[in-house]
Image 1 (cartoon, chains in turn green, blue):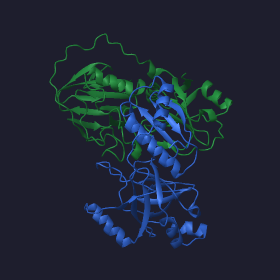
Image 2 (cartoon, chains in turn blue, cyan):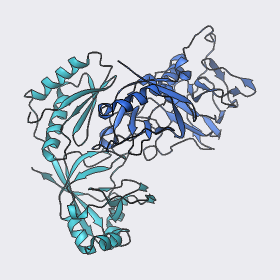
Image 3 (cartoon, rainbow over the protein chains, first blue to last red):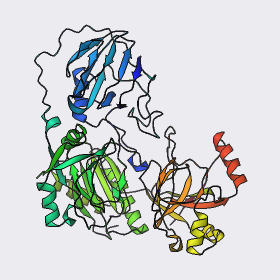
Image 4 (cartoon, rainbow over the protein chains, first blue to last red):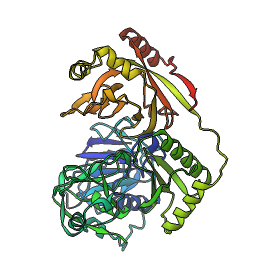
Length: 282
Length: 244
């Protein structure tokens, strides 16, 4: 068991998502940065869809009551086990009464904690991903207990020399496909979208990232149509909205871009004020 | 079946979007649902999900689609193929709704602005048989077609922060039921005690695209007894097989 001493700003248990329920209006959910979460599991020899803890901007404080091995990936939030500073992408042995805590955010925005065997929280509609109205809890709260496996394993190899490419986390270039309504934009609008820098507004969460800059827009809303995580919508008032993992299943705004999988991972590591540019994939 | 010429577009690494003319009608709906069934039957090895909306299908593949035009050719072949399909089994669901002032928060205002009596609004809303086009927006939120034009009402300028689960509402040209407590920009005219989304049930939503919905006006007293029966697990929602 793990006891949540402090939940952090917004910490949730996530796996790769809830599939097969979109036609009931249920969002996919799942980890925002799939690359970081998959690596966190792979390093522990877990299945890549094992549930991990996704921590946003500030980390929680967790009290362990089991022998096991953990791994941190994604954002660097100055993790410590008891008083010892930890590095990301390394295997860490923990014992009962160890406390994992976090400090200042140094890089990225979302950190992932994997644990041997994965987190054993409630499964709802074939997924452990927390989502309001589907799972009992939509985020970690102080005093929660998270069930984990007991694993007495010797840790010999500490992944020395393992090089993990995390350039996507810092990159401001976001790869996109043309969205279904991209062709309805004027030449000027298309050029403005592809040649200008945009910045992340403070309306950003697991559902969507809104950008600060507006695009002059005279497109009408569209007939309600399917959307996916990574769909970029343009509202009648010219707001640009990037849908993320907890987004609705359908939407009525023109879909001007669709982010690549790596583009979504990259946005998931961005915070308010950071700049991005859209790069059209051939 | 091929009375329309849908268009095909790549959506992302592993999805293709198929679109019909921008219109809301049951002919397009049944064509979409037949096509969806065919794809699920013939391409079940490579396709993980087929999602439908008013006039589109989004095909999600299990892995990245490297040859997009090849995949589109396969989809087109499936479209025109004569696959044996079971006849569509649609149902009509009789959904009880209490239009009492206790639930119909905006009925009075609608009645005044439209100069139609509350009783007439209730009649116009409950005499129609609505078509379920798809489920979206929120888990269990049915997109219904068929609202009487006299009831079209622009959305509220300022949405309510929280409305009660089961709220029956009108927004623009649409009517719907909120499956859970949520913020809402639509006009609330009643409430249904029925659960539209049960995440822990084997069948989380009773209705599906192509089904029909009819609202049955009930009194406050009936509402209370249905609510009680649901709570104790003894309530069965009335339905019949629907033939076009």
